[in-house]
Amino acid sequence: MRDYILLYINGEEHRIGGEQAFVPITDYLRYEQGVCGTKVVCAEGDCGACTTLIGRVSGNGIEYKSVNACIQFIFQLDCSHVITVEGLKLNDQLNAVQQSMVDCHGAQCGYCTPGIVVAMCGMYNRTCPVNLETIKEELTGNLCRCTGYESIMRAGLAVDEARLFKADDHYPPAAMVRTFKEHVGIPIQISAGERTFFNPVNVGDAVRFKAEHAGTVIVSGGTDVSVNANKRGMEPAHLMSTSNLPGLTEICVRENVLEVGARVNLRDLELYVKDLIPEFYKMLWIFGSPQIRCAGTLAGNIANASPIGDTLPFLLVMEAEIEVTGTAGTRRINMNNLYTGYKTLALKSDELITRIFIPVPEKSELLKLYKVSKREQLDISSFGAAIRIQRTNTKIVDAKLAYGGIAAVVLRMKKTEEFLKGKEFTLDTFRAAGEVAKSEITPLSDVRGSIDFRFQLAENILLKFFYETADERELACL
Image (cartoon, rainbow, N blue to C red; front, side, top):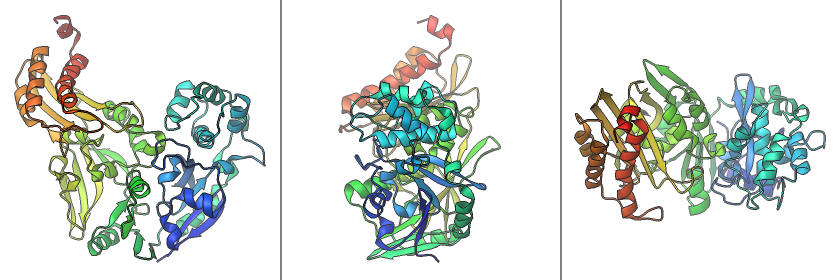
């Protein structure tokens, strides 16, 4: 058993225990190491000023991803390598991205600049050459308060590719990988005051710890838990990370069912389903910034149990199943039976999510996923929906609908589904279905939308679905 977190920062080894293990990596960088280039502004993963490159073992090398450091706590980062803006220089000279930002006047006030530089270096470390669309996508999670995006885009396109920062060249991975592999199989338990952190190395130990410590908070990507810690002062007595659990990072398709391990991050899932389930890919693309998607997990979005969780309507209409593991073994729960109330799951106290099973839609099915928010990127949903229709010629054979943001849980729209079955696939049918949908919901007003707004969305989303999926002949008849 270890009592410390092992990580590297800009190539130097650190072993961190005690109270320091419970702080954000940004606090450790700034206050303990004097590495102040990583800025903290929002402390909730929205602005990207704190972007760092976080590398983890992949095969015999290290794979780096751009991640918001403000919501990455030390206890999440065992056996990882953190590269900050200070670690990007090449022999005390600016690297190509940094030099291009200078030459193209990409920095204005400068507060957001380190995060932008790190994100751009991460992009070039992984992909080269790049184009304007790639740069825009990769910098979605980096907000510039001075609205200097045009010069930043120019800087990204003007990078001298011959002088690019490459992590493996600057930080040879062999020694780090060897050290990580020596440590990753050893469980960690760290206590500080009344708080205990546990990092198990097998699922059996994980569920036993959860069974013995009521109220244990599970941390995977930490994109929600860490925000609650930063913004709401949440300090659970017992924390457990899944970062070193083996066998939970697999994504595969077996017998037309997509299997997703609980540790699979949303970015990897997004890339995997791009051609397999294009609608799901689009939803994941707007789920959050690249920095959020590189950290967050599908299992975490499910466990968070928010009625506006972006992936949940899709999982409900696909009749996805959740594999949960406890001291008595594993079992599967249909997503439609998982939520028993607001933020309440039908899990036993010792159980945790280990896999998700998602049937792959047939090519003949019509599937559309919707997220309504004030911004396309970096925003929480006001309303979400998934609509899955099977039709034969002009008839609707089967219908599955789920709406989020209109109740304490994401709702399957059973009355609307029954109304649609057997009806003609026409605008009048979907207009009438909209009225049925309005009749079976009782939304609330909140900061993201009024009751009337949500009633209107419940109706309009069905009309939008028709216009997006009707064939040319059906549209010509309108």
